[in-house]
Image 1 (cartoon, helix red, strand yellow):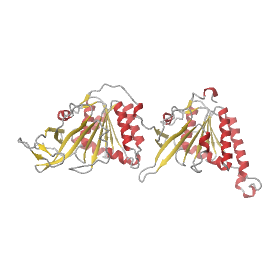
Image 2 (cartoon, rainbow, N blue to C red; image 1 turned 45 degrees about the horizontal axis):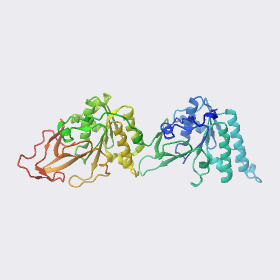
Image 3 (tube, rainbow, N blue to C red; image 1 turned 90 degrees about the horizontal axis):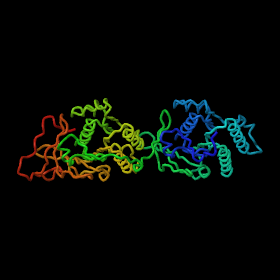
Image 4 (cartoon, rainbow, N blue to C red; image 1 turned 180 degrees about the horizontal axis):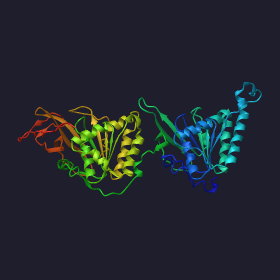
Length: 504
């Protein structure tokens, strides 16, 4: 059993990826905690992982089940590839067979009075036999039913709490919230409360999240945190707080390897900055992002691309035609490219995937294509801009360059984006269609750059088999951004595109 003298400073790690980070290191040893959530939210899976972590550290562990059978519990563990044996004891508190026989049921006494006492006695007898350092009690709903009244229920929980505390045992109580939402009896008694929730969107898989609503004497990561249940257990994605992640790096100018584009950007972009590429569908937003990604890889740096909108094989073929050898860069270990399913992904998991590429793989250039797809991954979320803000700030502080594309509605004239994030980005590259000389053409301009000067001109650009090509500033036209320019100069008109130029 645990040493009671060290229970205030020791932490019992849960073994659930991400959860210990949310809890500030784990569960304070020698205390009782409540893990509550509706059926199917992952309580048993987290509890089993908690005991397996203790068993791996050499602790004796006890799982007391009042609702599930031991067979069901072991099958659930096996579905994650776990074996419940060794230092883990499973104690199934099954109802007496006489309770199933109507002739044997109590008539003069309330059967709940006898059942609660027998249940508690059996529970404590097994505890004395095993002498565990970690205990899971599944679940409080059964004890609440046996207690019948809130007073007896509270007294029973208090008695168990003091008993376990005297033995220095770390206890996880499970509750399926089948009682009224206003019943907070267990909340006031336990040392900490972890709430599990399941959300069902109109389309796509269910979303799960958790929140630590109480933790006495311990700093924890507040708010909601997304989590998933997959083979192997639960994985929690702690809410990203950019201010907690600061690194030192030398800011330098990053080139695109297209001289005219670098000139338009005032020499390039600053390392550790965010770049928003804005324009209607088909203007070449992805191509501009790929240009910077490829240039980074050619410098020997690692990069990552997260694709929401396009099939990966199609992107490889299209990029290859324009001279971007994405597959070769991926095979060389310089590029990580991932296609994301918006219907199956929570914003917390996406942020964690991006963090892993930057933290573990040291990617210094990140392309997210597009924010429209990112928004589709969280259609019922009201905090999209906050998610994006924290992610951008985090990447900036790691010295990574973040490129985000946003498709605007419309083709020419006034256009609107589904989400306005221009104020979040350090640099905004604006792409536009315009009509001149009977042709649909494309122009690029920089409308914002926080980290230095940039050209205030508008340049026509072409996308061909040789890649991205920009022309000279269109200083003899007015109204290009409106889509129908007026020629006001005296020089030659626009140049003709080279063979092979076309839309991306």
